[in-house]
Image (cartoon, rainbow, N blue to C red):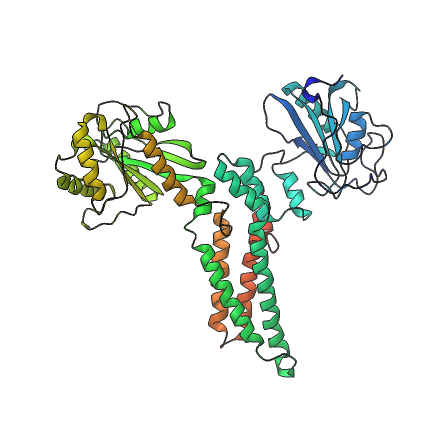
Length: 515
């Protein structure tokens, strides 16, 4: 009878091209890899999450994988068919003690994640079982624990994944919201890498034509108009890159989270708004002005988009040194914010609508430290005016105020809410979601966007190098060719095809040990 967690499971086939079982290439004993492969290291690690779970996956990759599978799964003859689950007792290779009963899968090279021989043990997820299996693997000659990201690094070195695909995989593992998942999956599919590879191919062609013209033009072996064709290609590439770079950091913002800052005067209800949005008492709320002295942060999922929400100190002049430092930090956060929620206490507004408009405009200028600019325009995508404590206003006055303020010019979009009664909260969340979505964009529509700061830096270097080509085109063709070569190198550093070794450690170190 099968264990309960595997009830009904007969076979797990991976959607890759099936191949016949190769002849046995490793020893059937536990004496280690055969001669000729002893120098290659086989790595192993827990690839599923840590902690108690129903099923845990332990993965091994390298030449000793088959040896480990044979001696731990009791396979004395042949290995199981590739990519087919087999229910076996998993034993310690030295003591022969049964450690668990689970599924084993065999992935012969090159049809595996890393391109090497791989084996997976699907075992019960108790800490004692996982520890016992890992210790047993460590006793097999030629095997050692994997370092962080080493499986994915081997996949990259084997050509299974490009560097942008590796980064997409890392983002997918760390994705916390639906929009992050969609963006990461799109990048992991290779769409962004294909765009950069296409640009690389065009630059290679341009470089070949320029160098050929330098070497052979005097012999009249080069057709007329070759350089004109290169000029057109370089201009087209520059235009494409410029459009790609002018994405307002949507992809990077979606990857790292939208910075939303709650700002305003003391006792406006900023901390109450934070607690209402995150549905827990994250910040202290009291009627004493200046309660919040430091920045209080919390991560939120707003309609599938990641938001890092920050509550800040009330903006006012204060003789208290600690509070002044809090105000300084608050203004600093406002300067860095993608979106600022300016919270205002409705009870402090003048009853006259015209005066209320002037009051709010002045209040916004004080938040932005632009008091000397009376005609300041507040971008609708960067600011949201939140009029709090509407429960303190009579219904008639509230309706009249809303009508007048929404028709007033010079104010960002506004919402009326009451953190005490939650009135207007749903409408506020709808407006907030719309603003966040505008800042991040739709990860599934249009051309793939930049997701990493290093991509942007290398593309900017590439763009500058192409400008060097145009600058020296009619002065020194050798220097112009060097510009194309530098542009190609910068692109190669994104895809991992040229001079990427110095950035690999930075990329792979963020992966978990079993990935």
